[in-house]
Image (cartoon, rainbow, N blue to C red; front, side):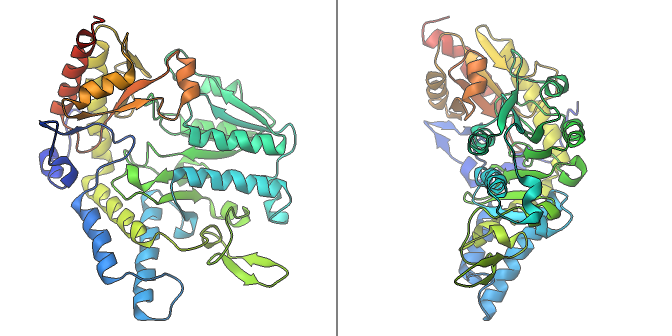
Length: 426
């Protein structure tokens, strides 16, 4: 494991205005990046600069400002494409968030099943008895749309079960994926356990039975190098706000030939080729999925966030977070009455940990830590089936990023060590 980082964390923290203040009289220790990341001045300034100097509707005007706005908007798409290893910027679809992106794919399958999209879309059509496979550890955004798709098409909804620690294996997946599997959807990294899925092996398994693979990359795109083409998945979704960017914008990546064949989810302006009073034809991807007014300033800010991440180095960020994860998990498991879910200390995981404090509800844990200026996430983290399988109603989650320090981890550990005594259950 790498034990040093290739960047100066103290210097980088100065780039984040949100980290430069106190909460309840303590310096803020922000350990909730798994939900949303803080933004550097690079990103804040980029969006403000665009709005002050270049704000206009894209793809719709012949005037100079519209041309400049369109250029910035499409340059942002190219930046995202390069970041994730896309073959071209046409493989990047702007969405409102990752949940929207996953729903876009699910609704495309439904439309194809209903006969929409013509001959090219038949590859997405589902028949009764076809199987949609997810895992028991999925975020609701990568579970509920597939449940709904199964209910509306007659497909069979199946899932890969998790073990007692909340993780699952390639062998577990092999026991579920079979000849009738048409869709395999799973998270690259679990937002609860930090488990890193064996993506390439799963892709090989799924493609071997003719299934398409949908990857939830929300917890991987911000934290480690990501080459979607190399991984071999068919679709992937991620959000800007978890990777130093703004809210209100996400990405669906898909192989171009699949995007061009997938029926659109939303219809209206900007995504059409020809409209008559009798029928409509749609533009190729990505525009066919981008109906209505677009998140232009958000896309510009998203691209700036990516440039910031690239300047720091995704490899360095990954190494930094792996080291923090080891410190976090080792420290938590050493405390009496603390149950950490996910891989054990010493087993690779992303830079987050969810844990249960015996006898104390997660919300009480979160409030106790907040009183000391430590921001964590509490609840089921949009993963109720996983928590139910683990026998828990909620957990407390601490998640790290490039700006997280050893001292913040130590403050968390010290606070957690006091919780059971404070609530009289030690």
